[in-house]
Amino acid sequence: MSAAAHHPVYTGGDAGLSAVAEAIAADWAALGVRGSFLARNLDTGEQLGFDTDEPVPLASVAKVPLALVVLDRIAAGELDPARPVTVDPGTSSVGPTGLAAFRHPATVAVGDLLLLMLSVSDNAAADALFDLVPVAETDARLHAWGCDGIRVRHRMNHLYECAAGAAGNDFSLALELAVRDEGTGRHTIETLDPAHANAGTAAALVGLLQRVWRDEIAAPAATAELRRLMGHQVFTQRLAAELRADTLRWSGKTGTFLHLRHEIGVVEADSGDRVAMAALTRATRRAGLAPDVDLAIGAAGRDAFEALRS
Image 1 (cartoon, one colour):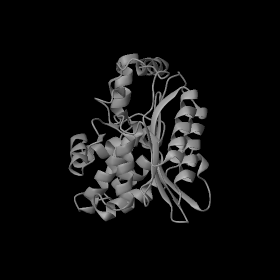
Image 2 (cartoon, rainbow, N blue to C red; image 1 turned 180 degrees about the horizontal axis):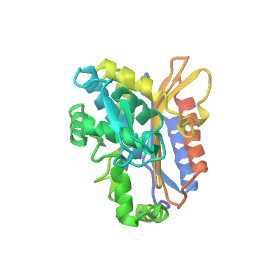
Image 3 (cartoon, one colour; image 1 turned 90 degrees about the vertical axis):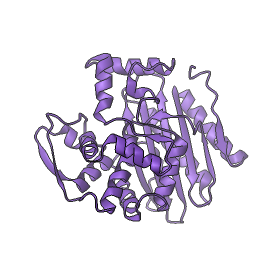
Image 4 (cartoon, rainbow, N blue to C red; image 1 turned 45 degrees about the horizontal axis):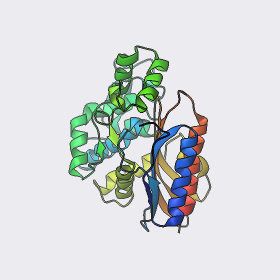
């Protein structure tokens, strides 16, 4: 189904909230973006969004459930956060940030791998943690916690392996394939297929954030540390872009790969308002850089927060 023919399914507690959701979807469509969005006030339960149950490949958003599983093992005494791990760039995951961009081996504690993974989206740090808590274990723990709308199926480097398998080392071709396949539903790059990728829905991701912020999942020490670490994210060009104020705190995690531009997180106000959000987007145009899409995601975050705050 093409983006032009798509008709979003809206979520809103009343006509006003539904109107905000409809305006966000229209803004995204005008930019050539398909996606899903959900924002929920964690205390009142009011919410707005669209296509909230559509599975989407998560890219680096998958690092949030991985972090929760690792932190729960730490809280249970099964893993030492001070345990040193040596990451060798010759065999580690690729990526533009953190250890993935290093040229020489480095030894880092488990707790600091978590910080690198969530603050600068370090792929090498994430896959070093997958060495300690394997993909299958992470996925099984999520299932045991009732997070059935989130699946963890592969390491982070598998994103690049599958893109290279389809397009060689031509990242522009990989992007072209991703955009072409978005309109057909047949995915040349396996990790862009929700049936094979690390995948989740906006509803499931907001549900996870809600349980983390309410200490309703894993050990309380694990959820508290995840909240702290997500507060260290350095990328603020999406949902946080228009939520910057001395009276607001943003804790989030972006995900970017080829035509995917995502972010999930929670904005907390000094007034007591807490709103969790998930914005999952797929561009229908070939653009390695799309600041207009980032700005539209930021506008969505601002409008949703203003509509949902008490």
